[in-house]
Each structure stands twice: as structure tokens, then as C-alpha cells.
Image (cartoon, helix red, strand yellow):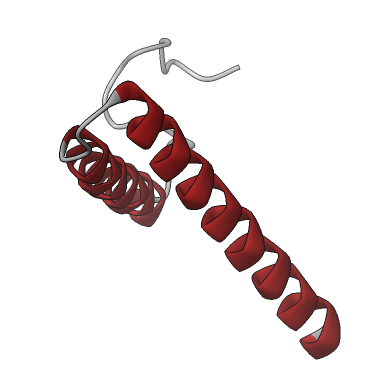
Length: 79
């Protein structure tokens, strides 16, 4: 038993801090998502009618799904 009390400085075994890169990565991903969604929303707001908005949304959905399929296939090929 040591004379060192819990919470006393200096600590015997410091707790490792979380990776600061993890937080930066999350911030970058969130910013990219927000910017992209904002651009899509702006494009939809330019449409003249509800029907045109729905058609544009469907095109965006199809384009995003196609991009996801291409990216997944590329990852499968490269391992």
C-alpha cells in the first residue's frame, strides 16, 4: 500500500487520452455531410414544383446509390 491517495498529483498511472485525430475526423465527416446535404437541398429548392422536386430527389437518390455501388465494387476488387 502506498501513501498516495486517489486523485492526488502526480498520478501513478495516467489514463491515456482519446486520439485527437478521431474527433477531427468526425468533425470533417460531419462538415462534408452538412455541405453536401446543403447543396442537394439548394438544388431541390430551385425546382419549380412539388412534382419536379420529387423527380429531382429521385435522381439524387439514384445517383447516390450508383456511387455507393461503384465504391463498394471498387473496395471489393482492391480488397
